[in-house]
Image 1 (cartoon, rainbow, N blue to C red):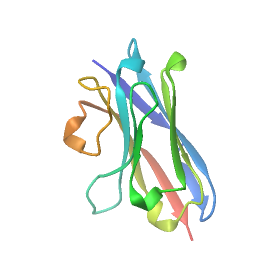
Image 2 (image 1 turned 90 degrees about the vertical axis):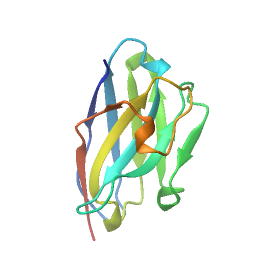
Image 3 (image 1 turned 45 degrees about the vertical axis):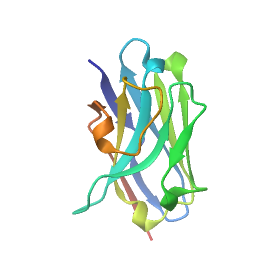
Length: 125
């Protein structure tokens, strides 16, 4: 069983930055590919960024291209989402998710077996 805990959310003005962290309570978190998703009010949960086991392969949604960066520190069982140039439309609850059946991350929610509880990000314009 993998437990994921997100942190780092909060309120920020447009143009600002936040760094989200996803902490995994599991041995060998490096064996898991990880994705960040977000869900705005009354909208479907959508893929944001993903990272492979090794950290060598990442995916991103077009809406965050050039603004959001994903990285991992496997020694600390952490995955980060650095969010720069934030916009009001980035306001959402952000979730991290993990999958152990593949080394590659996925843009599909159904590919992930484990989810965190989410952290709120609010961007004011």
